[in-house]
Every structure is written in structure tokens, then in C-alpha cells.
View 1 (spheres, rainbow, N blue to C red):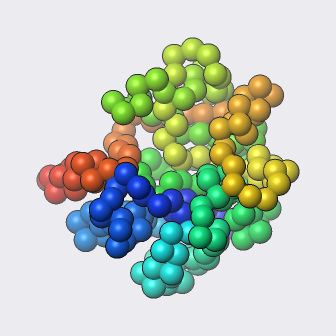
View 2 (cartoon, helix red, strand yellow):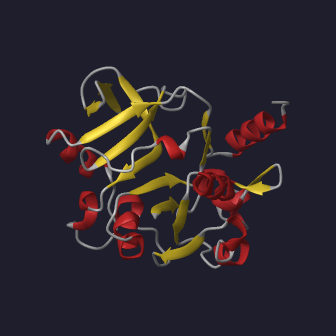
View 3 (tube, rainbow, N blue to C red):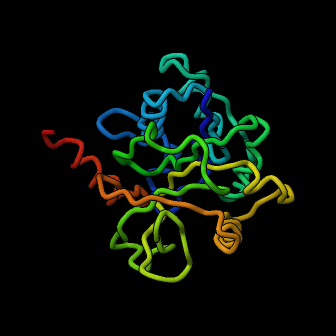
Length: 222
């Protein structure tokens, strides 16, 4: 059974005032919360066990999403406490709920046409990241992609916040808050971070203006 982690613990400061009353992943596009976009796509990819990490307004998630049965999945919640643990710490904190096999991880605050079913079930290295062309807000990119491997040097693409991970990437880190970037860099140095390029629809939803743009896209005829 495939497992997945949806990262949903952030405060969403840049989305204020919308996030003063609602956690960012529960903001809606055409009446559907952002996080449901991922639950539906994961369910369509035969993922039946999904963990959602939470911190800010954590109680709102079970109230809105329940146990996942309406989508044919099982939802469990990994509470990080009142302060989020960053992406790395949040992933490590969720490991006991994710089982021993590689898992998909996706940030709740993106919208894309990435096919989760097409992602590798077993990454060649410690993780496999989906890279996208650099958006205007991140022109410098993150990593270079050559022959399916990721590097620090070269023409960089932006990490699209979707990947497949082995638990070994973060399992040896001490509990607490930490970023994933140092783990990625260690994996690159060891030749154990792979990737693929995605050129389809991908949007980050970090500000009210970005949310409005996604809502406008969703309202247009297909």
C-alpha cells in the first residue's frame, strides 16, 4: 500500500489576513480546499494511507477532512505542537505513521497537474524530486538536473514541492525543527538524489495574489 505525507503545518504568514481565521491548506479554490486537491490526486494514484502534519489551527483539519473515508483513503494526523518543525523536522516527526516503505510527500500549498501515479515507487537514491521551471518569485532555482540526477551546480530548476522519499533521508536526525535543504545537499554529495522535470501546470499558493491567480485559472473553461 502506498503512503503519502501532506505538509500542512505552516502558519501561512504571507497569506494573511486570510490565514488569521483559516489554515492555508483549507483555503478554497472553487469551493474545494487546497489540501483536498492533493487527497483526490493521491487517491487516484492508489495511495490509500495519507498522513497530514499539522501545527497552526491543527484541530481544523480533522473537523474538515475527517478520517478520509469519503475519498477512500485513511487519514492520520501528525501534530507537531504549537510551533511547526520545519519541513525536515515535520517529516521526521511523521515517520512512525508512514511505515517502512518509500512515501510521496507534497506541500499542501501548491496546485499542479503532476501525475502522482507516474512517480517512482522506489527512488534510486534517498529521494526523487519533481523540478519545475523557475517561477518569477524564485528565478535562481534550487538544483540542476542532468541525466536524472540533481546537482548544486549548473542551470538550476525549482523544486516543485513534490517528491518520493526514503525514510533514511531524515530518520537519523535528532527530533526537533530542521530544514530539509542540508539533507538534500548531503544526498547530492553522495550521488543519491534523483529528479525529473515537469513542464505542465504548477502554481505555488503563498500569497493572496497567488491564490487569486489559481482561482482565476480554475474558473476558465478547460
